Length: 190
Image (cartoon, rainbow, N blue to C red):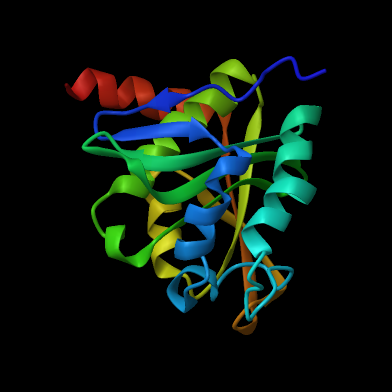
């Protein structure tokens, strides 16, 4: 039984709702765009099948949430709560603890950095994890900037296969102590 069911989370501008089966159609409409998938793991089927979102929810995400191994949220704006704009997830996997995607029309507004802040807090303070590691394709500069702004550091690079081909796979890391130190520093600046 899951000791930590996925809660709804909120930030100043965003609502993060636990992923549910009813989100399949909205995900299917937004997710299969080259700008979204090109730097994702090659396990993501491309071209994306017509039932890809439903199959991912039914076969992967929802069962992992029920087992207490993963936490998945949809990302929505407070100003338009009916509109899904992306997704963010936490996973209890070696070297793969957080993943996300945001539809292109909502990129560049700081929404994903804002979502990462509240999800990272959940990871470190509620799930009490000592370390967060996130993998990313080296050419994915937007994702790299989010990790840098969040205080993460690049710890290694290895070979990776992505939807758009073969690239270096960078592993980024931050410890709970480092994360807490950054939060204390930010609070003192206010």
